[in-house]
Image 1: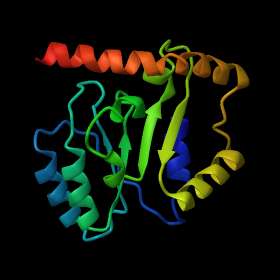
Image 2 (image 1 turned 30 degrees about the horizontal axis):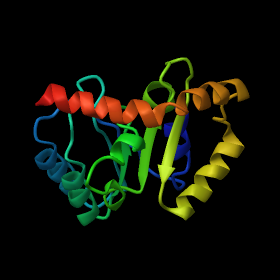
Image 3 (image 1 turned 60 degrees about the horizontal axis):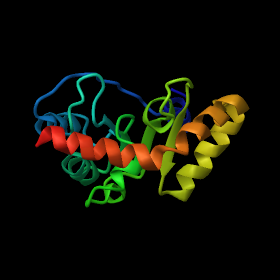
Image 4 (image 1 turned 180 degrees about the vertical axis):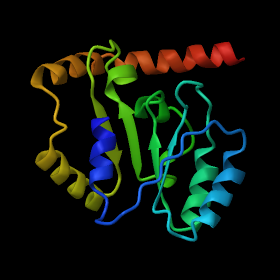
Length: 172
């Protein structure tokens, strides 16, 4: 939530935020129609993949292509698929989105005993704006929560590949 709040607080003055929570089967078609209806006024498309609670996988590349063609930024909430797992995949998600959000409480921490989020960026200007907002408006975890997250992070390099191998074995 703190990561989400930081991103939203970094929006320009008079920005409009329209949130639509829906379960869709063909996000590409519905997204195209929604962006066409907004007549270029949609600055950001925010997706979650795998989604919570259904764990539906979204074609991030396809959604990004649709959004970028209309001038929209793409933010990906990767709560259930942290960067360590993404790094195991052959595709480069960095080409599709400049903003990735993760819940540290889940996969990264591994113990579900902290409330913390992280925004991973590949855009220095956005980093500068979000850092200012985080410093000015809060959203900073306690030192103990940081220690707990760091403790779990120490085993992420072991847990993530093992989870990916197990998921692949179950899928096959």
